[in-house]
Length: 270
Ligand SMILES: O=C(O)[C@H]1CC[C@H](C(=O)N2CC[C@](c3ccc(C(F)(C(F)(F)F)C(F)(F)F)cc3)(S(=O)(=O)c3ccc(F)cc3)C2)CC1
Image (tube, rainbow, N blue to C red):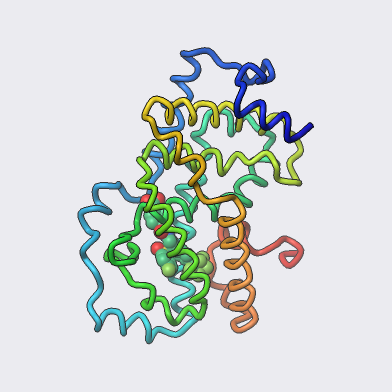
């Protein structure tokens, strides 16, 4: 019945189970909560990213980055991503209903979703006209990250940013896309799947309500599929493991605890 049920919930809102039904005021409050949670927890403001978007690194600066040793460049980037993920954790905590979830499930959703939300947010810091991304104060071309030794990962991140930029998402749409990506009820390790599913359906309903009001329903079909995001996350984990084989102690000694907690599996921690 799964297909029938998901088909119904998409097309016949009256098929919503009772706990999913929300009043008009609750709907407005939920929409504001998602939008404010996003606005208050972005690392950089949209207008500042826009102002700087033609500030690119000079060839000399590029070379300087490209000549950095692999472990140094990895450590810098891992610190940046950890900073960005702290904001993403804050976004989750401000989503009404997230902190009411089973604490184990909150961790499961953040472990699985933090990198996906990072990738979505990255498109805000991406200039699709010259294929550059905001990095350490200016916009950087893909080649700047050469010394990381994971050009396929960087390329797939840039491609994802290009596809998201093509949708020209508003900050409101970005907020909802992040919220529904985080609250994915299909993760296997969830203890209270039903509670996550109820919250997911409410936020998805509010997202569709926003899109109907702005005549932007078509983007729902054009958002990157789940597996496109998870493939890039998988590639990130593979590159991290290759790096750790090359520099076995760096990850332990120099990577921030939050990054290790999220991306270096417990079995190795013990
Ligand atoms: O909240 C906001 O306003 C946004 C949040 C997201 C920010 C952002 O784009 N980022 C924050 C950290 C960023 C980032 C992305 C990916 C990674 C890695 F995958 C690897 F290095 F391998 F690529 C790692 F983890 F393995 F190391 C590290 C760090 S970055 O800006 O340092 C950056 C690095 C490489 C790029 F090729 C493009 C960007 C992306 C931009 C500001």
